[in-house]
Length: 455
Image 1 (cartoon, rainbow, N blue to C red):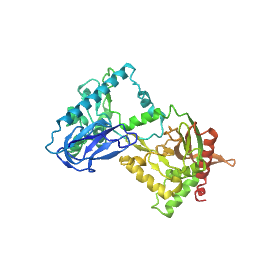
Image 2: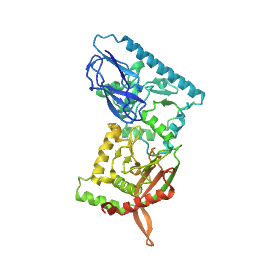
Image 3: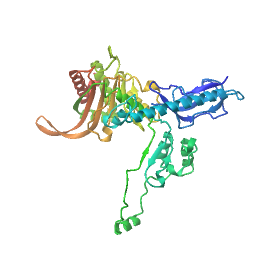
Image 4: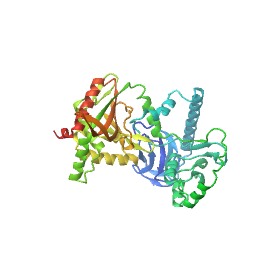
């Protein structure tokens, strides 16, 4: 008997998925439990397994296209089985989804671009809010559209995965002919272009002789520019949609307040150098030490290692630290479980391994959910100080800035110290000002005297 393959729920916050790659093609035999396709969720790329035996009779969603949870994306049946009824059902379901989307778009237009959910505005607030929110890319497959004068102002339909691959490989999308529905440029087109050597450099350095000619020639007359700037619209990835939704539940409903302190990091730098000299294979970063110290401070201040639960406040017995990792379309927070009970070398190894799998979107849901406290470190980008947005239901997140030498006064003398600024965003429903300040005092005391970690 033929069975329908529907878009499965592969992560706790997933609402729709993008078909990254079919692992089987129409006509292939499939068995129950066998990997059938790779799905881009809001967090990671995960395998979808077959729930039946038979032949993959029909693929209804192509690579690069998206579908909401429960939508029929393929049909499995016997080789000679009549599947016309299931095909009709799938088609009617797709038309219903399209009709719902059209009605939502019309309603949004009537309300100034924001539907009943009120999620349009927060998506624009994302950049200014800054900070750790969980995160993975997909889109509705609508493609990119440019507007302006000239021949290049036509519509370009590209799947999000194809757009990302083209950008990484330096491929001019307008030089390609899409093989997807309605001429959509999909992943396969980019792979073929890469094989054919159609990559081109985004910028080409001019020969020095040409530069000399330009310098000696009269300045070229600048063409007149009329009208508004050309633009392009790209599908919103799932990670950006989730971040926008989570910000709605964080920066608005959660009453934030912020505490900032300066920490002398000279002893941490010396300890890290000593560890490296002792064993070069122990690759301990400053961030690894910060994670360990934060975990130790959380155990001493359980009021911070907590979350608001409407009628109760939940206090956690272990410090599960979420570490914000930048990926292509946003942030994701792999979790270091029981960081208070792990050694620095264990934390360092786990952070590297989880961060690598986060960037390749291979994390399992249990590896990026359920943190009790988060850390977002932008010091490697030269950021000295910032505030981060709390990731509900956690009660706090620590924003870590750059460690750099600064002139300070100690014992009446001006001296140079390695200074790092940290800012903790606190949920005032759980943490009071004095409670947050006491946590930061402990955090600072341990970092400035890291030998506390072994006593």
